[in-house]
Length: 294
Image (cartoon, rainbow, N blue to C red; front, side, top):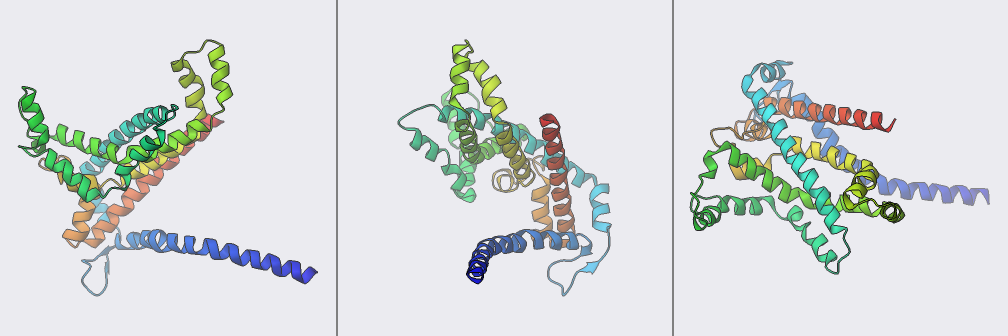
């Protein structure tokens, strides 16, 4: 009997390992190994074509932090990402509240807001570019309203505006669905008790909904920080860093250094800096959240 029990336990272990090992192998192959390889490339001079990288120590990192251009790109990555994150978090929260209202068409709306997330970025961003052409749809609408057309591509304000619009349009769906899941986990009796005590809708949101969504908010903001620091495709397809490099960000420069200019060493250093800053922001945010919990 004892041997049978042991063998049954061993079989269960093997099944468990068979399930989790492929997951960790995937993480190691596409996450951990590229991370260490990027760290290594940052210490080398390598064009991606020669036989092997040449070790140069911390030169790439020194060039990064002493070159004003890279620091401007990093700062622009941070503040543009912060704008997109703030707007997306706020609007997705209110959208989650709207989706939580009982409705016969709630399934349709919940599915519809998720569609932009799975749509191909190259196609949807191309539509945005067409809309912003000098003779495009947006200027046609302005003319019919009696307003002067705008040359969107030559205004930093409007390019940042449309980058934020596209970022939110693309990412608001998943965040709203997560907010919705958090809203549905709050005990309904709390709302009923507050309503009986005379609390209005704003007070119920402030004193019941928001405190009940602390952990959901932490997850959304944390993943939003990571997404904002990795923001690349929207700039590449919509503004290409224009006008005159005023919407150029570090992730787009990383692409140009590594893929276009074959400067793999500098690209590795840039990727490492972005990764470290993302980790630091995440740790600081977690410490703030944990301190509030204490």
